[in-house]
Image (cartoon, rainbow, N blue to C red):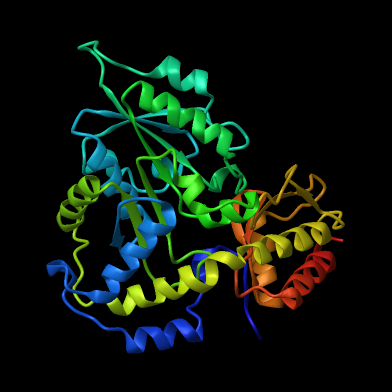
Length: 346
């Protein structure tokens, strides 16, 4: 049985072109800065995001951690959303390893932090309080339905942060999905930010890695932190080669995933046992709940879909699902998924 894996775009496999590039990659010792393929990836990523330099890291979590620790000292504060990936899903690393205090503000349904909330919660010179050094946003926003932050909003936050001398970081794990949704470029979306991370191993389909981009001075500091965090790699060009193919070939096709997400959502909306979130999908993610009359739990539905149909779906609550479209989900998989849900839930 062919498996249809909709749990996440992290399940993507490298393409045949990536595998070939990995096999032929020129490599050296990256800790010495001598891996030509890693250097090429870092330069390409920085250029695409409009920054001076880039740093290849094993994961987006390490990228965000290195970024926050580069901006903040022990006892400093970062303002972020209460649904931010950095806050929810990165094991408290900024606090455990960096002593950085997180100040969580309410994320709006579309992923934004209200500018007035940010301004009201900045902390400056009171000796009783941590000092606000950093604001962190997320685009696209995972736990807000894969929503996209519009450029006029991020520009306003960028202007505010510059005016107040506070750094601005973007968890741009899926920034190329945001660019596709807005018919914009990653460079334009990254422009207001002092630092940006993005993942190669999600919708871009590379097997491993993320890139952190910023000024040369910032990346020099982050490079040292990568070493402290155990992220120094040797002949990492084998991995970086897939990342180069991802940026060349995959970044501009993400609109296809969004189109299939809309097709899947339209089909699922006709299933009486499902209630889709309003506005879903914003990009490549679909969020939905079981209808009140359904007696099954989400876990039981997911188990049945996997066992009976080879369809894997993400469970995010007792009655709630997330499904993520990616390169390895085609039109046939979309049709099969809709048919399977109709068979089970009507």
